[in-house]
Image (cartoon, rainbow, N blue to C red; front, side):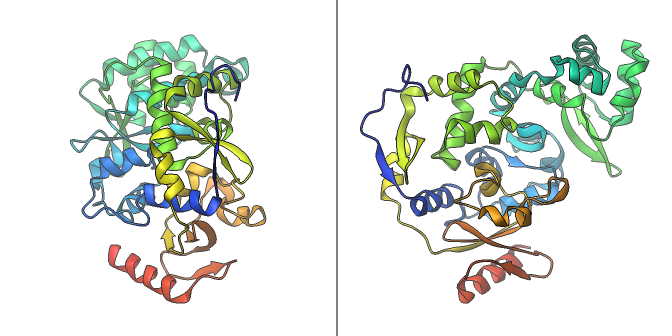
Length: 362
């Protein structure tokens, strides 16, 4: 990072075994929360990917939470979670009160303003504004299926050329609307997804949103570099100047640390805990799309050996269930059968105990 905002002197040294053990503890993997609140756990993890609803439920349950239930998987809930498109354009569970900050930061990519986006998806920025205005009207107090929403929007806008794009299962035109706080997923209806208004209210300024999101990210997945954060947020598509500015917005809460020769950034409030953390020998089993893996990124060589990455990050964006040992991914496993495929030696007794714990959680 540039020196104009970094005021840190005397970097402290950390090892990767310390960092990984600290992340496990912060993410409730060493000491699961007994009867944990799904909102508290989701907030600590900086969101829970919910592209696959059952995977989101597993991520919460393995950390001690009760399953979020039908409403928690699909829409705004009294428990305080919303399911919406967020980081990396994928569905996440987010704490309702923090969701505006996450969405405001995701929206800074503004990819819908690029001519290539308009050419690919057949919608101009003006089209999106018209869709958003119509969606705000029809989703106020209602939950509509994709087909119902498309018909209602087309009726109000008269933009028949958008019919095919609005009906797409990928939700290309709907993601910017989610980032603007226009819609989120509602309760399912007969197996069909519905959309509704999240009712999130006013969004924070981008710099304030960055403080909220960076604080959460570094509090669970730090220490980290700006590139790691950008990779987690929007797959490195944010402007580098924006990412520098976001880190600058949290300057008074950051400390630079040396992690085995790499300069990274940690929350100053967590620095003592990081320095005091001892490596762990724990064995843990994680379900697919777990935040422990997604927060660091599957290209994090200290977490996943580069040669093993294809076994974790698979075709069609599937992130496999993994076996953790000493904080590293030591293999993959099948939650249905309990079978493991290991590339590191893992203590058999600890692995057996963890398999038994998963059976009790199922």
